[in-house]
Amino acid sequence: MMAVYAIVRVNVKDAEAYGRYAALAGPAVKKYGGEFLARGGDYRIMEGKDWSRNVIIRFADMETALGFYNGPEYQEALSHGLPAADREYVFVEGV
Image (cartoon, rainbow, N blue to C red; front, side, top):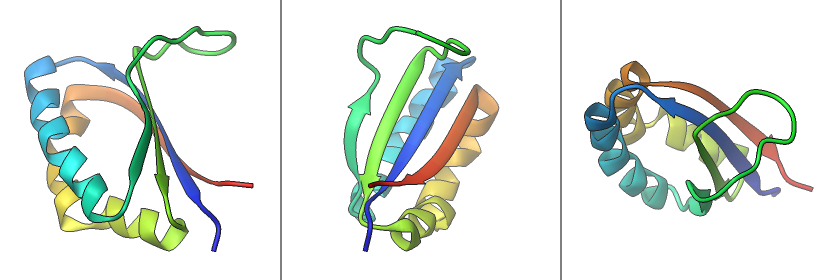
């Protein structure tokens, strides 16, 4: 089994709606054994597009990560988050 990292880059357009997303997303991450390694915080853009919020979450493996993302808890969170922000969300296997 290889750890999988969710790399999430976000520009929030509607802070109130995104707050509802965040309130649901955190417990969903925890339910699937995810661990936040970075969430917000200071950053520097060295190359590429500027995203105001950067998040890294570690999951046990790809199956667990996909179960989290496609699970009803996170899908409910996304119903608030997707309209409220521009995002990039990718799962990457660790080394």
